[in-house]
Image 1 (cartoon, one colour):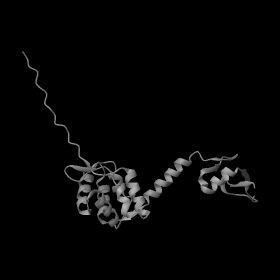
Image 2 (cartoon, helix red, strand yellow):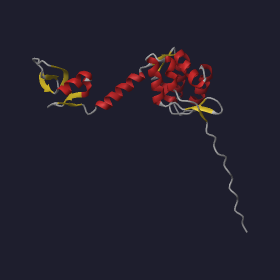
Image 3 (cartoon, helix red, strand yellow):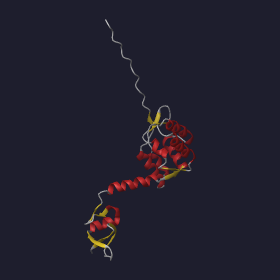
Image 4 (spheres, one colour):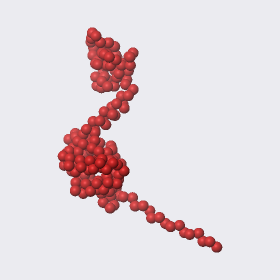
Length: 194
């Protein structure tokens, strides 16, 4: 059986084993045909032939990032996660984040908006400004413990909650680590002048 890509306005609009009038019908291999059925974005029409999309990986990564940013969880699910991961609830976490945000070199209105959303939101969206502000910045939980949330950890936390794994999603959050204690400076001995 022969497989064809149907081309219209220099774009692949489908593939099947039939030709259509008013479309450019280009013969394709079984491999391209089967891969196209699995993932239509993997191939493009370059004006002469069907080829693998050179931007495919970047486009897929961008789509995945956009999907993650649209994820959300309830306020309760978020704080259930922080309680399980760090033993910290909403009442303890809010002042910690507030103090951290207050010293950030950002527009005060942006900080106020982020904290207002954090205090009052019924649901937390991954794209929320505050989550973007706190990634990769150590957040002190106690005098001796801190957490540094990586973007990938936060993404995975939101993704697993959205996929129904609320009971274990918290395991994607970082474990608390000891706050590094700076070594005391030892004063230099003055040079004796004879």
